[in-house]
Length: 313
View 1: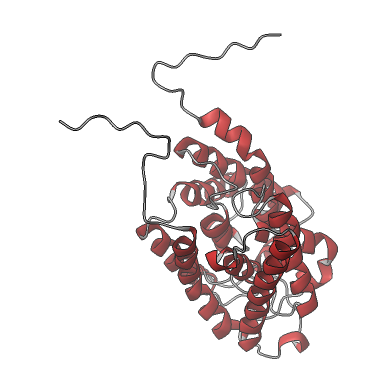
View 2: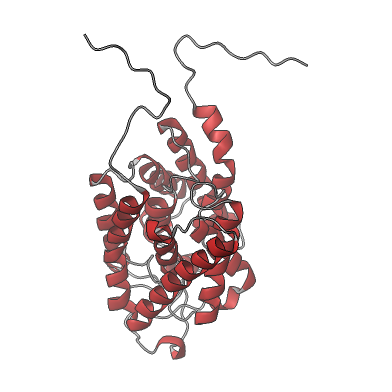
């Protein structure tokens, strides 16, 4: 009989690395990127390329300045750039997009120590800062298939149309992406394809996306809004699938994921129905990111036979 081997954790090992996980996320975002180019034209691809290049360059420079090991090969900066681009309108000035990349990488990620140590999803934090700082640029949306780019006539998103009682696209148009909005958020079909890929590859668990989207669906119906339009509008799909499942800034336990999804869904509906912004997904995820350490403490199971540690004054 072989003797027992005593060794420190981790005891469960895997051939999965940060690089191949991020590569899977990039592959999962490709359908949304392709759809964005079809819907908004080549400027959507240009914005995405600029964001990716800027994030990689900024991360490289940050690591050099901090005299730390380079991490650009783990592809996390590429994912951040893609996600940020997906959350920008096609009319965004490129310098605003680059500034958002700086907020995402230098401030939200590297300032706190790099990947795995950031308190919030970098792309989400950057989008919120850009929305607060450059509101006119961040809400300048155009009609789909109007390839005039920055010269196109501005038009409201379905969420704004719903809030104002205006005419909205059909559910089929909403599902396919024939609607105004940010580059990567408009096609629910493309995002779902990417989400299924991530679940099949076991990169994410479907718990948070299902609870998040389900909460928005049920609460919006209870408040008298059309639940189908609410889940197909704005950044709910891309937020629930690609941002509320971030390893570093969301709970690690299954019950923690449920709590995160419930909280994000509740906050999204409250902001959409009663807030000053028609969209609430980014704010909701950012707030839940901040609460993640407390959620993890609440949802962590006590070890079998473990005793509660008594605190002494």
